Length: 574
Image (tube, rainbow, N blue to C red; front, side, top):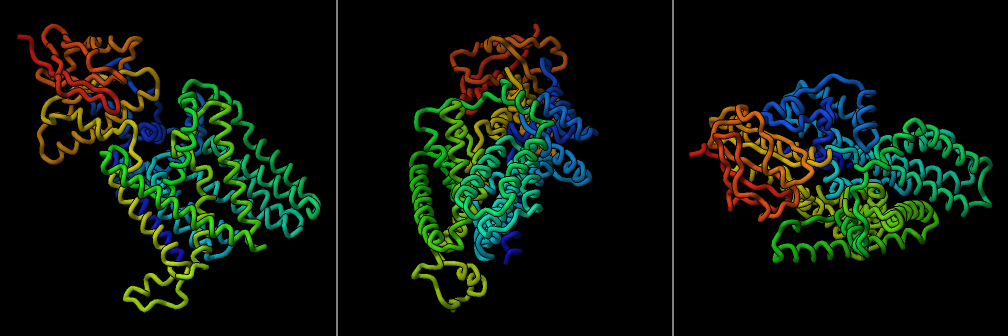
């Protein structure tokens, strides 16, 4: 049965894995995985789009992990380990005729499937094999887990390591409550897992701190019955984690104080509370809400709230039942304490440090494995004690397929979340949920308004993140035009151009220094300016390119959504 859950998790994560365009953060992953960095992006010059993509996002440059470590230390704000793994993974897949998006996302998807297995072992160790299966199947269909698994980023590897660290934490808790001497192997595994996690994502530190606080509470509760050397094992483990991270610690401090790390906005009153609630709901259900008219969005929101309310009520019933049994109370308390500690850390950072972590749902990966584990065991417990729970195998045509799931709990408490999770997966793969702030595919479709006509795109940038955003637009545009060429539309591969220009005043971008007009296509061609938060009335009516070409503003093709972009139509001067 576990094999079936793993297969389900793999299908939901790998199906149409490359159907969506690579977005900002994934472009950064792609550059690093191909041996580049944002510093390699040509700036202040206009290049053929095919040349730009060929240089940066096609062929892998031979480098080593120390090169990547240096890049991450000086040009990024993340730890390096995942990106070393990603580089090697893409290198292994290079001989295969696969899209870049699939190569990049397949590794996080694989880690996502492994995370399902890890949650199975977490609940199996903490509670029972039955609880393990329930936790695994809920993570397998969780829309949040599927979303993370289809991002070419490091979140699923962090989820996997947090799950494994929680397995060790439960083992330590069981050891403490049985009054046995510390098991060196378990403590060592806990130290290594947490130490590796710190080299994956900085928010893993929050998970480690929450585990430490949970251990302190557990050991204080058992202070009269602790075996000898328990506090010594605890203290040495903390020192071990710190020592193992010491080489990267100065870099982490530099990253925390860099301007690139200051993008999180300050909290707006109680808005973070609602955003945190939304992040929790997205772990069990997601329906089409973003970009939908109110007539569709409002019913979808009500359905999501209703289902999440039912899940919360049912799982609370199950937790109360778990709390009443001496055998299941300690692991339930351990997972609850860990989860509450992480949530508490989030709100300390939000309200005391003024960094609103709740704006990005993906950051809630820190406590996500514990939530899946608790939901699995609590829903199963509530379903087992439900009066509707069948006591014998139902005599239905599909009984041989459904009875094993039904036997784990009532059909409503188990099958309904599975059905809702699969339905949510449909919306995720259809790009109707977890939409990006700057969706490359939609912007590229606008830029490619007339595929048969040459196009020049000039984008403003003020920092490296905006360069990555523009590169995601360029890559998506190149994919559209390459697809059109393969389908038989005739075009010269160099009829699309892209450029990044840095301007102290964004209005100067409307008179870009096109010093080499001979490199541009012959008129007529479309000229797009991409300027963040540019108002329609601020665009000039005409742009002169050299002495022979005049570009006139198109009053219809102004797109203020996502990132402002305006079309100019360029013709030879009369």
